[in-house]
Image (cartoon, rainbow, N blue to C red; front, side):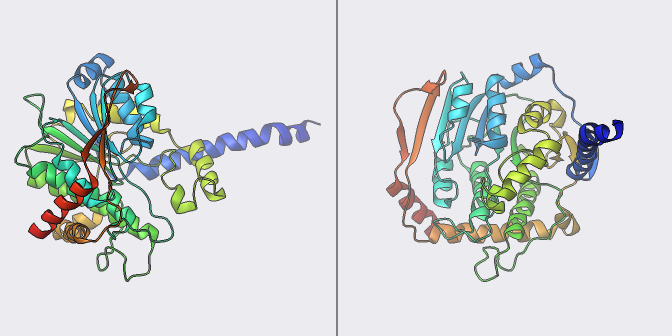
Length: 380
């Protein structure tokens, strides 16, 4: 009687526990990357609070997933936030008593990104966090300006915004502490061994391969960190690799949130990997304000706050950084010159104590966005 009972009642849970332990060990090794230095020291709660009270963060794409969890943690610690994104940050507003400004805009449009960045003059941020990003679906999709959608959202929006922020005659990115520089954090997948496809960066003629298209944006973001950290010594730029977390960002690639592949992936990841909140509370919220990384511009950090190597393709030839960013620049000019059918308004929402505050403002009308973009395209 004991053997059947053991097999039926004891053995399956034991095997499940063993599989979870082995799986977690494997995933930890998978997401760590090539570690080159130990993890950052965690800050005490009082230190976190005092530093966030002096921090004003521009959160680009922080309306869901990792960005939302980070914005919540920063807001609860006392930071001031300005959020850019497509969807209203309802969950963030409900969780945060601080004042929040939300600029609603389509960040797949380079016209909109240019105009909205111009409108940020005078906000006086000291930290910018880029989490905006998607993963390609199996079929090629494009923005209104004809750019492959993953490339537009996950790379070009960041490329354009950082260039404009750092070259503005009236900079909005400034240090708060005299001994600290302003900081830019770019979330991606640093250290990936992929080689980008540069012959047809927009996938117009080449048969579309969604994962390879996404790898273009991954390597492009590493190149962005490399380039900005060298060209602009007045700011500190860092790359973030959150590793594998329980998010639904990969759902479109697997056929949507309701597909059996996506549900299976969510179950497995949920069993083996940390949650978004774990990553934010144990690593990211400390990383954003620690003094330890002040002299480490151009450094990449993994899920555990360890320093890691960047993309091998970039390290293999210093000219590769310029090569991939040159392709991004071509697409930016192409986007500005494109004919679009549905330009959109840029709206400003303000919130206080979890509720709307004041009237919704039209920061730039669709007509203004179109007109300013055309002027800039002609100048370019």
